[in-house]
Length: 296
Image (tube, rainbow, N blue to C red; front, side, top):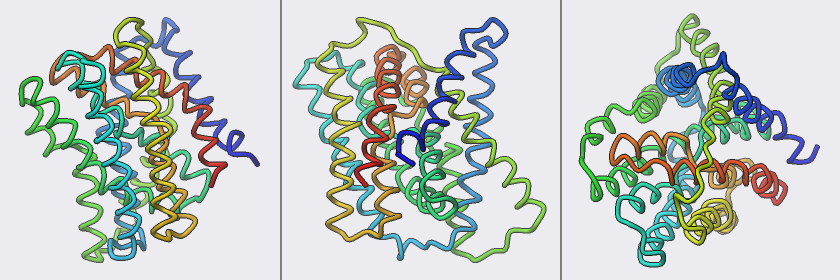
């Protein structure tokens, strides 16, 4: 089966979310509730369960982690160049800076499930567990320079960071996971990706004129082309196993996380250009993500 067909169900769920969001019965407050449920309950359950029960260890995955840090650092460096290149207002640049390296975990886990099942999900969880704190600290640090610092305490309480840290610690201590909590976590985790994809579709926003076209192109090319290319080259150079190489390139090639918009709005109020980058990037990823998967 081709990569495009493999990912078709996931992109159809995004399209369904976009369609449902335009129906009268699915008001914005409903989708706000769905996003909160996924972000604070379902997705942390998926991350904790995967990391707590995974046979992977940090020592075994050191090269995978190194690749993740390489492509993330590349995204940050190229994103920083947008400020002098396009002379954007500081608040706009600070909000958009994160769009070159933050990743949509819902799309990443959906793709990982398609290509490698539980093993790929475990490797993805480990990589996400390392990179979620990194990308959040970088995004918040840039926004603090352009606004206030109210979100710094919230970073420490970030549910994804907490779930990753707890899951890694649970695994490291080799603690057993009792049958009943394990089953509950399994049920919650199963709902995380489909509801997350629906929420991604519902959150698509296209507002023209919020960002110059050259800057829009710079961030999209960086996120969807250059960062995945760095991931692929680094994965080959470090000799990653095929499954780990797939996980690294998938995480590098997914569009920007929808939570980037929420963070921008809460910290400096410049959300429209971020929403445009997320929405256009998600649509472009319908074509680019299958191409990167096929290249593997």
